[in-house]
Amino acid sequence: MTPMRLIETAPGKFSLLLYAGTAQVDELIEELGHEPNGYFWEGVARLLVSTEAPGLDERFSFDPEADMFCAYGTDRAALEELGTLMAAAATDPARMRALITSAKADGFEFDD
Image (tube, rainbow, N blue to C red; front, side, top):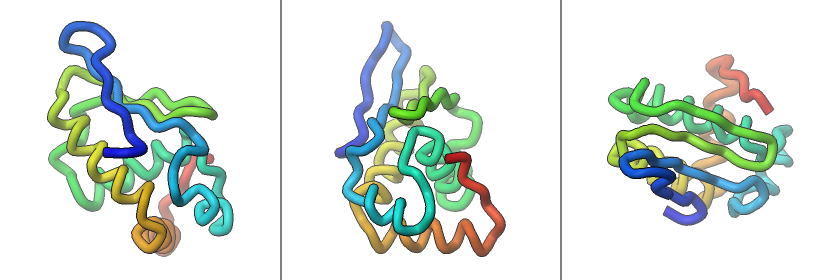
């Protein structure tokens, strides 16, 4: 799930994290006119859930910051699934380019 990290913050409570600047596709994201910060990655997560994993909708919450993406909740399996989806986007330039291109065509706005 690299560069994603899933940690247990308290018994039964989990956070999925991605620190800004640690993804292999950061330079590409910037080339495509976005800032690869925590808010951008929240947009990626929301986009992936809506287009590829609608069953994850409302199974966790988001709390990004400029330097870090964070999704949290008690449903470890849902966060693991999101982490797998996001890791694929964070490490594959072709996949990230396709996501951003598709989002733009559909009118999806990243909050970066």
